[in-house]
Image 1 (tube, rainbow, N blue to C red):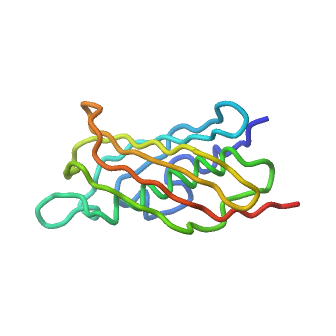
Image 2: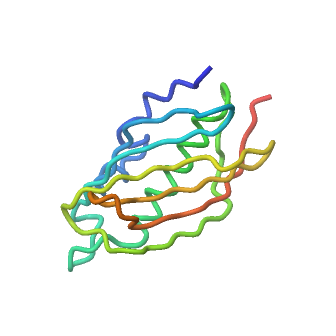
Image 3: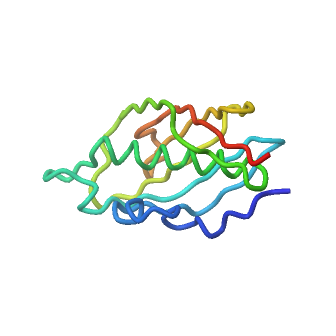
Length: 142
């Protein structure tokens, strides 16, 4: 039975995600615990430097949130991702003010206390713009 996280669609419960131009649109679970989440990103001026390029920290913000959302989609009932333990982010192409992008996070593996995720951001031509991997501390309600 999938967890209903519809209330987190849109800004994911974080005003900052909406302010930089991000929005979660879909989530689900493939198989037993392979959660995923996807969204759109239309960079706002707040997300960019004065030259119109999205700052690296904004990529990290969205990719971290996508992995976190995916992990939470895969967890049962009141279990949740509690904190990001570590994360790496690579920027492969620039993201530019006003151009549309997609992002997707997914679960790589869940253990009792730790979740592993990965996320990517792609442009309108489906070319990889940035990617990230992360390790997350889990809180189990039982």
